[in-house]
Length: 288
Image 1 (cartoon, rainbow, N blue to C red):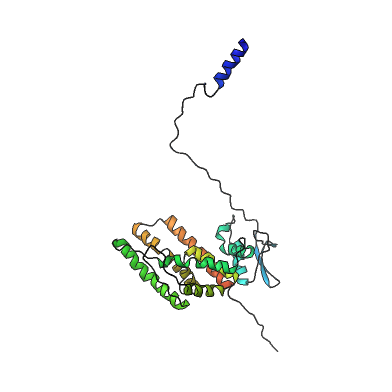
Image 2 (cartoon, rainbow, N blue to C red):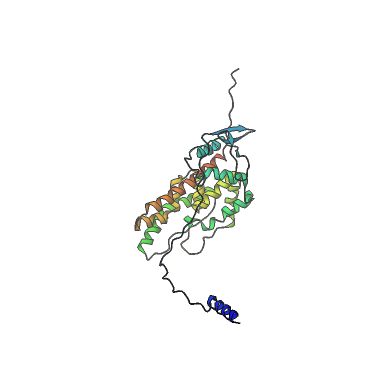
């Protein structure tokens, strides 16, 4: 009985309900969060090249054929596009920064089509940006002098692009100053849809990339039609941000970096569209 009593007392002392509580330590007012990101792969090749095979062009890395993420051999029909992709791979330094290789990414998307999207569905996704186009929404705060100056700038810079777009594609889009979306008729959507469907599947991938970057179908088509440059398209899409930066101050490492990244994406998308929408024919002169 004595041993049982000693055992019972020992269990009570070890129980979390009966053992004495340790004094609480003061908690730190701040904590450090560590995030681990995968390092970019090292460059494993020395030379890049382009091969012609069965009417298409392939990219080689030290005589090894480049493949897509799904393992498909990387093949394109455009020789200039193949040369541009090879230049992207050749421009990598010690590390391969695939996030900056926009032409390669667009080609991989077109070859693998991971989401199994057909051209008609991709065009519908592009058209969904029409009612929320960036340059169709203009400042509405008339009582604020700062907002009035912004509105005057939007009218001066955006309205000529909108007028050109209406005349070029036979539509009637009007900017709005209300919180609601501008009215876009079914006839206007059908006209833009017919124009986009005239491009091939690969070019539509470029349109998706450019429209998603600029958040504007109007600026994308103006850039593709060579009405404005890539730099102008990016500045027009960032007009309000640029105006506020000029008024409140500019953070170079943030605003400039974002602008340069947008220019790189839009330039790659527009180049991708043109290279997949043009054809080159070579005829040899008959010397006889």
